[in-house]
Amino acid sequence: MADTGEAYGVVRDGLVAVVDGRITWVGPARAVPRELTAGTSRTLDGGGGWLTPGLIDCHTHLVFAGTRADEFEMRLRGMTYEEIARAGGGIQSTVTATRAATEEQLCDASEWRLESIAAHGVTTVEIKSGYGLDVDTELRMLRVARALGERLPVRVSRTLLAAHALPSEYRDRRDAYLDLVCATMIPHAVAERLAHAVDAFCEGIAFTVAECARVFDAAAAHGLPVRLHADQLSPFGGAELAARYRARSADHLEYATEAGCRALAAAGTTAVLLPGAYYTLGESRRPPVDALRRHGVPIAVATDLNPGSSPVTSPLLAMNMACVLFGLTPEEALAGMTRQAAPVLGLQGEVGVVSPGACADLALWDVDHPSELSYWIGANPCRVVVRGGEVHDPRK
Ligand code: DI6
Ligand code: FE
Image (tube, rainbow, N blue to C red; front, side, top):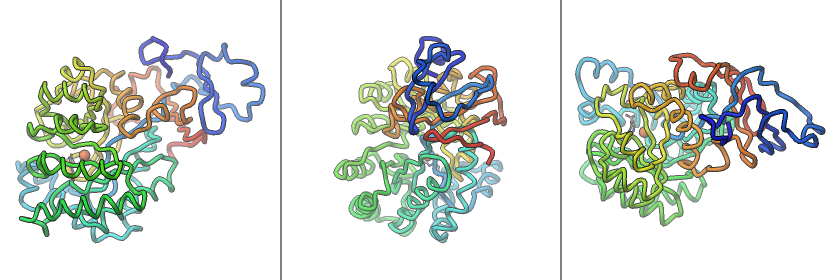
């Protein structure tokens, strides 16, 4: 869909021309220049379906070992996510399982999750580390993320999230762990070209504003952009910190304040809403969507696929939840998984739009209207995925 002024940027009876994996022309089929169609080697008939940009899931933690289904049961019996984390479960339990897995085991354990996401029309996904919390395992996770992108027709953007939790062996030695993150992990990830960005979890059960700022300073010193898990479980000043560092995104934001939203807008930072975590943890505090809109903060939506707080393997379900739970319109939800998600990964103009010059990453859907992408619950109407001009059957 292009920017035509009509809702969703709809082009009816449209045609997209692709040369060498890039879009060269978009418009109504009747208006296509003859010289463009003359040398066409392959035509794909949309058959009355809807073509959108390939979806972008800009926030996942899909590489990990084990599950946390036991904690799901504990929460249903009344324990909270924070109580489980403080009792040694939570992220730490996935860290133990992930450290014990080889690169191949981790790849095999994670592949079906990326397959599921990709089968729902996703052509770009971000994957974070953060379940290693030691040099070897953090880098291993990023290598696995890279390998998965080579196995499947998905572009994988990799984020170092070493500041996800304090590993138990560093209890009472917080600064020593942050030294390791800043002086060893970030430089190694940069040297091996494993990370496109750096993220941190700014929260009472994770790292303080000052600690996250240290990590951001180290990232900046190595030329890496930053993002932040901000104000998810408590009002913690995360949005303000993200804005101060001109982070690409501030994610979650349930407890972000009005001032925080204003700061995000001024900094050009995107708000990434993650309704899967809100839903799974049974939260009642919604992110301040109205304030984000009022201040003009770009809004993206993602699955947050992770074993603890968001075992969501469907981007369409995340879009549905963004509408039903957070009050986004289906148009905002689709934009949040396409156009608005691209800048979060530094890929604006490259993916997330159907425009000349952009990569030919597209999804074809068996629906009568694009609002249905947010409307159906548990369905997958994706018929065809195009990645860099190559056509794929999403069910294979
Ligand atoms: N916020 C989240 O929702 C995930 N990480 C984070 O910082 C949860 C990760 C987990 O519980 O395993
Ligand atoms: Fe997350």
